[in-house]
Image (cartoon, one colour):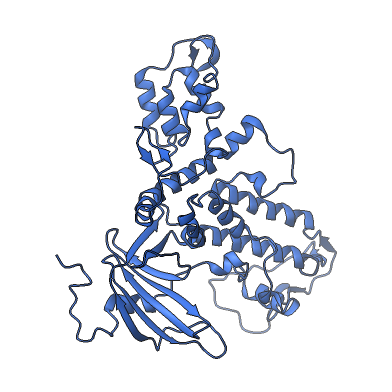
Length: 446
């Protein structure tokens, strides 16, 4: 049976297919500037933008001083690099994969894997087409390779611009079509971190600039006037003829100038206290705290110098959300990673639950996932919940055999009432266990 692309009739094999033309003209958000720190400072009004542009003309050429985006992506990527040597190149696509939610990997007809960082792709979940962009400075050629799930790759090229700027979308010439390749699509169930992290980074950048200019923007005196009698004004009535009779009026200047109030009344005047730098720092810290809420990474990772570093059970509890997130991402990647490993001839050095040979993609000996059976899971085991349920639902990734070798989990001297910890009571019934399992708020993975 012909594949979808092979079934398309072409009058000229060198002409772009409709889906190739679509990919070539597509311009997806890659968030590369965020990862590299070259960001625009958004979330501000025109006056704020004009003021900053005047006071800091080189700001757009500077890197942000607090790149939360890169910190989050790098921490997840460190826990997702496969161990086998043949798959080490997968680290090249982890940043775009985590940012965009999907990435391609191509194995050519000679058996060489390619892990592209610059690409566009479209998929229906079964059939995938990817456009991969590369540059060869030795040949001074820009290439775009269209790879599809039917094993074909179609190569187009054009000359690199004399000023070495980024290649445009026009002017590519057909080079060759090659069969016998394999295209793999890796995708995450949550569509990646890019959008949510970029929004948080914008707010952090805005806060940093606010702190930088607070002395000039807000440290001026703010005056107020007491005992002013303003005439009644009805905005729904037409303006009265003749000179203006309002006692106080606000004047807005152009650009980044402040607002000025004028009055015809007698005093007295007063002055408002301007915001302090401590207020600005507190606001900035509140934004950074939201990074932990969004990503699951413990807050002390972004504030290593604040407070007492958590240890023991506290560290395990704080790390559980991050551990479970890493476990879910690994589950998303493993099926396609196994297909890629089989094609590349990766050796199976581990065993599955049935004792059959299996791939060992991740090093779990010093993995925090192995220690995520925290006080919450132990309490559930003392209440009578099955350990298999706790390991699979509450703390996925835990190997219960390790705890058996260490003498097992701590046990309570007797059954504990779920509503009165420490008091004699009945263990959880099968119905309570089922009710706990059916609560989506208790489940650690989908």
